Picture: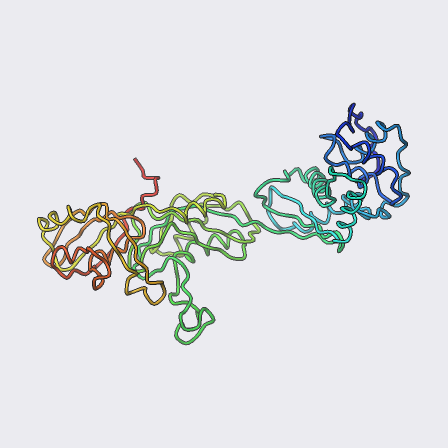
Length: 427
């Protein structure tokens, strides 16, 4: 791409230098003795004349001042600011395309790295001629490279977020890429009471592998994250994945109903468009009935923040021992429902969490059924409520508790999450 004057330049608009001080700046610029290409000289007025290229700005300024165009440089590489970088844009396009070989991408942005001395030299020129309309060589180069790359590939540039970010290291003559992650939203059901939601590093070796974890580096051999993420990571040919759930259930609790919302993030994927039916088939095959996934679909990174920030109510099925009378439960419901609970961090997790006091609300408690040994209840509670401690009281760390109000030392035999009330319920 030549940085010289265009073959058919735009006609200069009347009053191109009408802003106060612009004519003086242009006169000083034309009088400068530096070896500057038309791109770099015109860029000193880069924020004048909307829609002009920088060489066209230079032509407009000389026309309005009645001055001749500066003598073109015989060798563009002699330019003291860009060293001919704009003339080498076709070469940069090929470097970018080579850097992206083997990666699926549809959108992009361009960035560049420049010698700090050249950037300082450009700013010094603006200061000496008094220009407040200068455009950085980096900004102009990124734009022109993006336009040329878009023309060569037919793919839109300057898209946010892009699939790829191209970085032109101008001093080194090298192009590299940054690959944006891909994101998939879905809902999972966990049917196994021995399965954690995410990978849990071994407490003894902190993931390095030891005799306690049999060299796996994990407390549990598998997790929902791995059973869901592994097959999709393989299809994407990515380098890693992260699992973002809308909260989590205890390891020994099942997640039923419509499932818990999650976003799977896959880093540096070579493939960005995944065959989701094949992905679901592989997940099902690997999970062997322990995990089910529905509603899997591409999403944006913004969905991660929404999922992690959500604080929806949840409805639980709780099997408690011993059995309780329905009539007695109905008596204490009036005390419990809608009343704030004060919960200290449970004893069972106090070794890894700060000892805090929280106020949580149980929205409803419903009797379902009983047998000789246990009763089944449904409880709807605010996000973050410790349900097991709501039942047994945790030695007084949760008050009031169901055990305290019923006068019976209850224990949770089984716990299931039936619904995550995230506002997407089926009518």
